[in-house]
Image 1 (tube, helix red, strand yellow):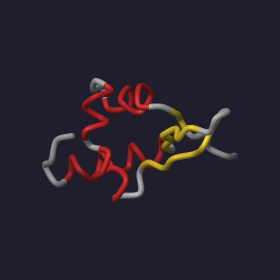
Image 2 (cartoon, rainbow, N blue to C red):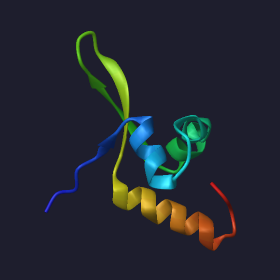
Image 3 (spheres, rainbow, N blue to C red):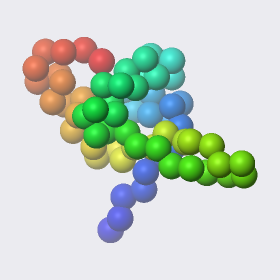
Image 4 (cartoon, rainbow, N blue to C red):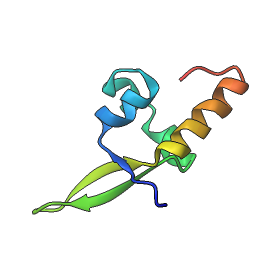
Length: 70
């Protein structure tokens, strides 16, 4: 079964129980870790942030294991 990517900062932030702006401030860290990616959507094409829930959960679990906060 294929996993469906969640789209938008609001949905990603909801996974972490934080405000969307807090998630956006972590954009560089999330991108470098390979947690988020962008797709072009609409006309004119605009970048939309996406992430797979399983990867988000694994990343936050790894951070928690190191004693780091989001």
